[in-house]
Length: 138
Image (tube, rainbow, N blue to C red):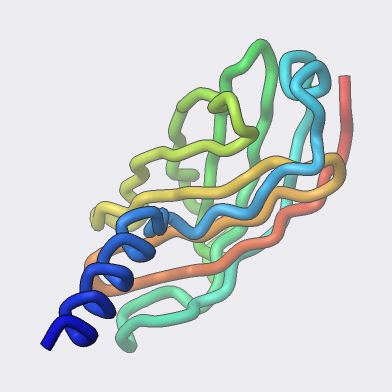
């Protein structure tokens, strides 16, 4: 009786420390994070969703002064108006933002590294994974 209760308590304690966000660690030092500027571009691919979900989005992120300005557009309609968002760079090199592509809410989470941004966008019916390449630094 004591052994199963102990296992349940141990499992609960281990799971309580888990962060449900899909965030990679950054390879930037605190000093590099404070001075981080540049642009990251690339696309995301559908990882989970129904037939109404776009297969790919084109992303553009610009970082300056601790702020992140971003935009995205469906790859099938690259000339359509872009969905824009603004957020901030967190102390650990990550960012979180709420975006509304195509009228549905999605949460974007990810981490900046020296040469890439790795993240995901999650919504009620569509999830996308992304790996954006750094295209310039200021």
